[in-house]
Image: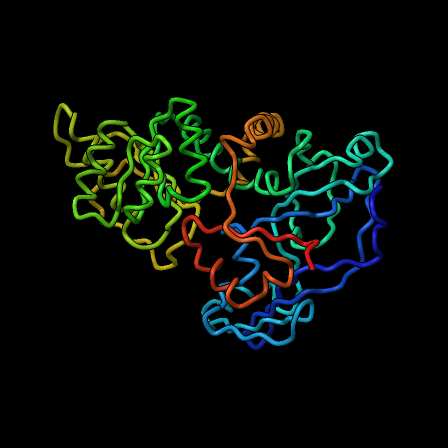
Length: 380
């Protein structure tokens, strides 16, 4: 028997103040009631993904964060630079709920058949506001999980799995046959490696440390390159010749890496060119930046001809391109391979209050490869 649903619930909130401060706190808010086609999910697990940090931390300087209060009365304050504040004007003074995705049990449902059918089921959701005890969401947006699936297993089955699948889908849609991925030892990168092995897609993995390269090789990756190695450019060019990869997805964003990838793609294309062209090869080379591990400017040295492109890539616009049928196809694969291809691993589990501890904030703000936090809202 389900415990009674409380009238109020706890929820992490992120506030940017007019004087340039970030405030993180736990608010007590009314527990929502599901509408006709909605369900109420008791959130049991919600991951902290890099895509959550923009809203949660607002690019504040967490190294200067301070904390007052304890437990649910904790308030964390951190300064935001004037340059960053110019881009946050629309959210100043608005206390915002946080958390893109999570998983839990449906404890109440609207009267529609599709909502009622989910009562008592473990579901995954991508709805926003998942760093709280409860969340209402349309029944059609729930991913019903197989019997025996835990909330931790289902908590990360939207953002990273659909992003990894979306990269492969984008590669195919745009006429490429192989791809490059940076920060490749991340949870997402390991998923992408497993997808590419299963689907026979050549993949060039770029990491930043030897131990990350070893991790991927242990998981069957063939082309793994350490960007800190002195022979990185030569090795990358050779891997691109071997795979014919002409599209890259870059989680780093800043610095020279995106430009070096384009340069090596051009060198790989010219390695088999029949004749010289002063305009460079006619092979189109594409880099999509989908993350910002390095917030410095993206630097390009224009030595890769004229057939190239660089831009941003986000999951939501991609899902809009493939439509509902395409999204359902990808979701079905995620459910079928949830504990294998799309398994996520967590190094830390915290309560709502624990997510506001300064040491936890410092750790997840660092976005270190291999470290991933899971929030357990029901914990005290």
